[in-house]
Each structure stands twice: as structure tokens, then as C-alpha cells.
Length: 509
Image 1: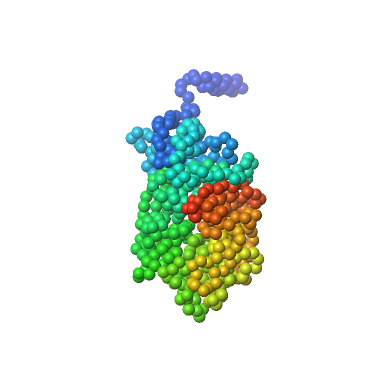
Image 2: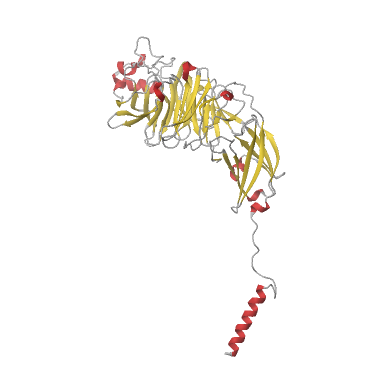
């Protein structure tokens, strides 16, 4: 028993000595220091971009290897309600774009979305490999914007966004026919314009950038947020130019193109799927598709399919993955759904008082029966809404390029965004929703509507007030007008089409 007590006392003394640091070195690991504490990040320089909305921040950093991402957040102006523009650049993106210079240990960080003529308050957040973060604040003074168009800096706020607004989007991409794409926020502030491209009528967001198709040549521009751009030429030598929309296809970009084939002009009747480098992957020629279907149905297509004339006037096309199909808008005639692989016509939806329905049984056989509402007339901007219905802007302007002496169809009193429920088995369609806006706005050409989240919409009346005003209206999920902006226009030049863009949490890929 005495020996046991002696051993226990020795053990206690040993623990005590070790705890007090006596009797040799401790093997306990030293506390790790977070990467954020040793990064020594600093803002060395601010360089002007091609417009005041763009800057490059030169950052110095001792240990770039520990960086996982760098983000910036632009504090909103006082009295505004759009969510802050926040952009994150992962390390992989910084490396791929060559923004880090290992020799100088500097990062050239693009910053865009600045308020022009304003001292912007930015928060830089660096996230490190160990999960630690570091916030740095910097003031970025942007020069006033000299708007050479005289348009986008003259936006009139008819209904301002207010506190507590539940709108699902905060930024808007305007497709302009007189400059690059234009971005505004839902408070009406101009937040981005590029340089070097004077017509972005045919444009879209693609991954990290914009893509713009030239309307007078077969060239495709890839425009970055930092203002730089590259050019690619279409691989098909028959194609002469782009028109109207670019949208996401099955594997590439759906592009509406004009062409000259064997000396014959094919005007606004060809849809092509292309990749980012301009390589043509697939083509659908509406003249061939419709002429073949009409002959099989016993009709002579000569007075409907008229190469050399703008008989079809394609202005929108979307890919539908659920059944591997395309839905295409022919402004002159109808909305048509075709099979992606074969081009076979599935259905037509349009005004049945027009030439195509009255005079051609072969086309009438594909027509959906409208059970409620107004048919699409002179429509634009097709998309599939969150509930699976077909969403479009119903302009209400009758045909104006049909053959002489043939019926042009109806003219409506006002224009409106509309959703249709399509039953392909029953071959019916019905109008499920419309925003009539007091039935007082008529926008006969161009224009658009797009959903952002469930039942939040951006409505773009491109040519209101006798084609003198472009009108942008935001609708929340309850159908309330969250904002109403107006810009001067000359026909469709200012905002022929406009889409919501999510810049409140943009992560570059």
C-alpha cells in the first residue's frame, strides 16, 4: 500500500512539472495562425476603365497561394433599395484570366457596377484556404459619365422602388441598338456601359460575359464586364448577319441569321445553333420546313414561303429541354413549335383571321384551338415561365409583310405580356395570365417580358407613346408595380428588349 502511494505521488509530480514547462520541451502543437492574419493585402492603385462604371484595383498580397476567392461589394447609395452589387472571383477564375502577376505579387482585380460621378464605398472580402476571411474597405471615386447617346442618363422615374419591396431582381440588362448592353438597377441608376461596340441589339448574357451579334456582318463579339472584347466570325459562309435574339440552345447559342444561298436572300427565316467561336452546329431553315409541310398537306407554298421577302420575320426562339423541341416566333404569322432533331412542325398558335390560317388547310391542321383569351399577334420575347406556361409579349400589331390582297389579321388596342397554357394532346391553348396595365400602353413592335423567380416580371414596352418612349416596368409576385421608368427612344433603338440580371450575388465561373 505504501509503495502504491509513492507511485501515485510520483505521477502527480510528473504531471505538475510537465504542465509548468519543466523537465524538457513540450510536444503540444503551436496554435495555428489564420491565413487572413498573415496575408498583408493592400490596395496599391486604382486604374480607370473604358467607362466610369469600370475600374481595376491593383492589390498587393504576400501569399497568393492561400487565396481561395476575392469578392467586392458596392454599398448602395442612400435612399436606394436595390440589393448591393456583389461579385466574387474564385481563385480558378483569377488564374485563368491571368489577373495575378507572380513576379510583382499583385492582383489586377476588375471592379464594375460603380455609380458614376460618385465616391463608391467598397468592401473587399478575401477568403483563404483555411476558411478564414479578411475584409478591407476602399473608396473608389468614379468620374461622371458623358453619355454620348444623350439617352441613358435621362431616365425618368415615374414610379420609384420603395423600402420593403419584395421584387426578385435588382438589375436590368437593356439590349441597345446604339451602344453596348446597358445595365441599370431597379432604382433607375445607370450601373454599366461598355465601349467599342455601337450596337448590341442582338445580345445575351453567357456565363461570365456578354455575347453580341453584329447586324451588318457575320461576326460574334464576346464582351467582358471589364470592357474588353474579342471577335469571332461565323463558320458558314452563307450567313451575312445576325438579327433579333440570341438565346441558350441545346448545346450552344441559338442565333437568328440572314443568309444568301445560291444568290437567293433568306431574310429572317433561318435559325442556327452556334458555339462561342462562331462554329455552326445545326440549322433550321423555315422556308424548307414550311414548304415541305405544306406540300405534304396538299397546298402550294408559293404565296406563303417567299424567299427574298421577309415573309416569316423570326424575332424569338427558345430551346425546350423537356421534349427536345424549339418554340419560334414568326411575327408575321404565329408561334410555332418544331422538333429539335427533325424540324417537324408540332403546333401553331396565332391569329386565325390571318393569311396562314384562312388560305392554307395544311397549316390549319397544325393550329391549336384557343379556348380563352387573345391570340399572340405580332408577338416578341418567348420564354417558359416558372409554372411551365408559354410567356411572351403580345404586341397586337397585325401582319404588314403579307402578300397583297391576303388577310392581315387583327390589330389590338393595347399591348400586354401574356402566359398561355398549352395542351398538346387536346391541341388547345388558353390565356392564363396577362398584365394589361390599364389597357393604355400600346407598343406595336419590339418589346419583351421576362420572369425572374415566381411571378416577378420585367416588362419592356420598347415603343410606347407613338414610338417615342421606352418604358420599363417591374411587377412583384402580387402583381404590384414595383417601379416604372421611361427613356426617350427613336423606334426600337433605346431598349428593344430588356432582361433581369442577377448581380446581387454574381460568382464568376
